[in-house]
Length: 418
Image (cartoon, rainbow, N blue to C red; front, side, top):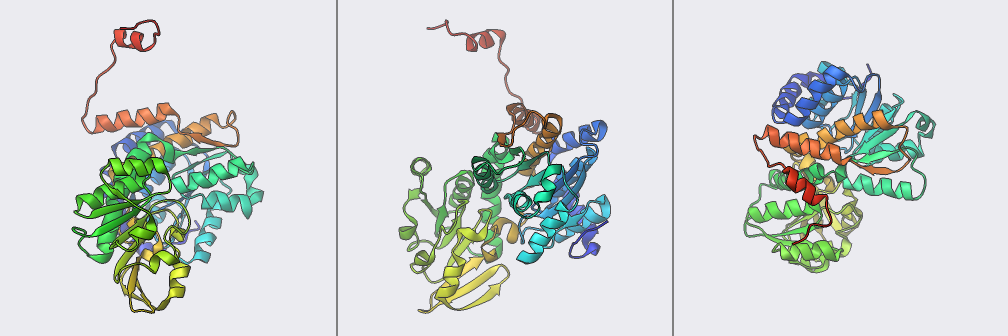
């Protein structure tokens, strides 16, 4: 079996960590048991480009239990947990191509390695796999019947492809499921991003000014958690609706040009390019800490910062200090990549339980319904979304009410008034 991991000897530690995460993923556990019995993915070749974490390992095991022939590569050069990658290879016989800290050339080499298996379905996180397939490996498109996408960033790219008429197969936008973005993006990103920043810096947030760039679901989560740690949170936005929401949620909202002069911590979560630019770095305080929790490091103008700096050094793991010509120091965390995975362990397993349940059930849906689907981006079927919420509540021991027959009749009528 072909694979490329850092060290296969790490497998034992990885297996223990996978087991620990899986203990808090009850919805995926139920799906795995059904998949093992029914084999709905029997014989399906599936290429996944995801963060190689303990939670992802549980998803891969679930897909394999359903009969799929799975291959996995990393969706970010710094997000791989090397012991998890080794365990999937040794204990689950799943080909994995991922090494934490891999350079850009190796990153795309690994993407091509999973494409070499001629997948029928893709499972992407950021759309690099799909993009490579459509640009460099077009000879494989005839094999592909469908796919899923995990992130806001990836969905933006895929909808652009669909609008331009170049998307060659249907894809389900897993990120848009309510059981994904309400919980994974808000609570998972919120907690794990702050966790990554603290692990990297060991700095106190209380009493500082923490600038959150972007008030989408991820930004909401980080703002909430930073405030909970005692920080004075500033939000920057380009869209008036989330900006208004941030104001109504009690946060200070201002342009990044003004916030750059005030902030002690900065975190971008927009899915866009050059959110913090050269001119913003020029305003920052000595010792400012800059991180990104959007999918790609392009949210930070690192090229511009490098040109401004007279020197740079790694002052501690995941912290690179750029010293400007006037002596001010700006600290960039995790090479500007996803800080929650670069310096920490990513989302807690309890929220990834819902996200990856969406992945597993969406792939099953596509396998069963591939022929009627056009070459566009689809939402997760509402039935799947509600099923996952229902099973999560059951696993938490929470019960809810049911509509009475009278209430159902009322909701279906138009002629019952006051």
